[in-house]
Length: 249
Ligand SMILES: NC(=O)c1ccc[n+]([C@@H]2O[C@H](COP(=O)([O-])OP(=O)(O)OC[C@H]3O[C@@H](n4cnc5c(N)ncnc54)[C@H](OP(=O)(O)O)[C@@H]3O)[C@@H](O)[C@H]2O)c1
Image (cartoon, rainbow, N blue to C red):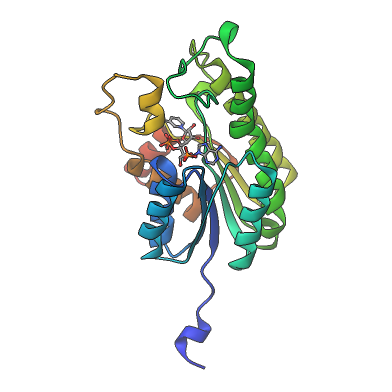
C-alpha cells in the first residue's frame, strides 16, 4: 500500500453564494486548506469563472441555481454526498431586498416594501438556509461537522431601511441558536462579518465610496479560525474574533 492509499479523503464543504464576495473568498481559502467543494450561485457565468479558479486547487462541483428552489437544494446535497459527504455547510448566499428588478429601491422602508420582494428576502436569507441544512444534516451528523450561517449587524441593530434584510437575518440567527441546541454534537455558528467591499454593499449605497471597507478576504481567516478551533456553537462578530486573534490566544 503506498502513501496515497493511506491519505484520508479530503473533507467536503458546501458553500452557497460562492461566485463572488465573501463566499468566493472563503471557498478559495477552504480549497487551499484541502477541502473539496460544492458551490452555488444563480449567475452561471460568474459561477463558472469561480469553478475554473477553484478547480486548479481542488475537486469542485459547481451547480448554478437559486437556493430558494427545492430541486436545486436537493442537487446540492446529492453532489456533496457524491464527493463523500459534507463536513461543513456554509449558508453565505444572501440578498439585500429580494428584488428581481435591477434599479429597485435598495433599502425600502417597511411601509413601502413590496411584499413579493420581502418574501424573497426571507426565503433567500432564512428559509433556504434552514431547508438546505435539513438536507445536509445527515451528512454533517455522520462526520460530526459544522454549519456556518453568515449573519449581519443589521440582525441586531434597527437600521432604518434595513428592516426586511435585518429581520430575515435575525430569523437566521435564532434558527442558528435553536439548531445549535438541538444538535449538540455539531458546531452551529452565526457570524456577523462586518462591512465588506462587495457588490451587496455597493448595491446598498449606489454611488457611495466603499473603497475604504475591508475586502472579504480579511474576514476569511477569522472564519477558518472558528473551524480549526472547533469553537463553541454560537453567534460571533468577526471584528471581535479578529481582535482575539490579533491579541494572541
Ligand atoms: N458586504 C457586506 O458588507 C456584508 C455585511 C454583513 C453581512 N453580509 C452577508 O455576507 C454574505 C455574502 O455577501 P457578499 O457581501 O459577499 O455579497 P455578494 O458579493 O453580492 O455575493 C452574494 C453571493 O450570493 C449569491 N446569491 C444571491 N442570491 C442567491 C440565491 N437566491 N441563490 C444562490 N446564490 C445566491 C450571489 O450570486 P448570484 O447573484 O449570481 O446568485 C453571490 O455569489 C451575505 O449573506 C450577506 O448578507 C455582507
